[in-house]
Image 1 (cartoon, rainbow, N blue to C red):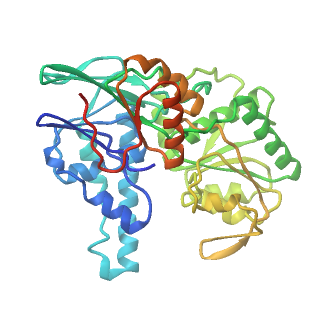
Image 2: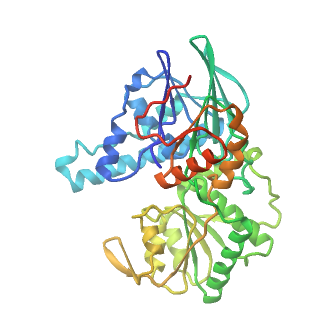
Image 3: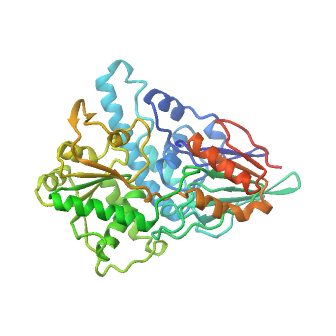
Length: 443
């Protein structure tokens, strides 16, 4: 699911599709993120699909290790990546300081993977390409971006290249958006190609409809308001926070939810909101009239004061899986308060704190102690910006007649296998789920 990265070799030329940061067990993740399976200095260019760190988060390290070529991306992706990579560099620096104190003997091994300076240098190498414009990245290779509808700036990559007297086509979906979630533009049909590299995050799964999501959220908010409690929503800062806040405002305006103060506790999400303001033409336009305001906390102390006040409110806080971020402070204050509701709107990895919150047990352990889990915990599926099974079938199906191979990436094995099976059933003959460092020939 993390560390998206695909090497394209055309004769002696090398392009990299995405350069994501792998998450997981500390030592394994550091080993994988530090050591690329190729020499970064040999790359001619990078093509970046979008600004989530599992797709762009290791770019500063690539630059640090000798990559000097262009990084092609959309203008919004460049601006969002500048925010995301600066934050990631800060986290790397702070983690290195902590590791040096806790494990001084290993301080040389646990230095920052990269710094904020490395992040700035990566952004300086970005070359922006608007949607639906062809750009020659080599005399015999053309690039075109199409809006993927996943997050602001996300792109489907279409590569056309001449080699050995033939023209070849490659399509990389990046993360594909979903239909029927009016916030960004709807995702387009996936362009046919000799090879389609497609994500599979929600293969075999279906999202709740907007109507179901609204009904569930209404039940939660009204019940919590009746108890005089607070609604806590852990959410990833880029993508999920913006979608959740958007629909909370809409549903309050339309009377589906009672009007409550909405707070966002995420410095990163606040910076991202400023980027969104520069690209309103890429968003589903909703007149501001009648929408309740959204308040952004600027300091942890400001957030703590509001969180400890008696008045009911909704707090959307960073940390989608509750593994870190500002949500932890609010959990410490409210996990043992039966008036509180915790609404999980993101994917929860099996061993994450969010996944443990969903388990039916009376206590939960975090921050070195056991807590009584008396707050109500609810999961609402549907705020995802990823295509689900029905979306994949609708968006990939029309490419059947002109597509050679499909390789399904960026998904847990059961989800990728389920999507592969469905694609074979509708007629795609060469569908596979590759392993790390597998090779595919486009011919």
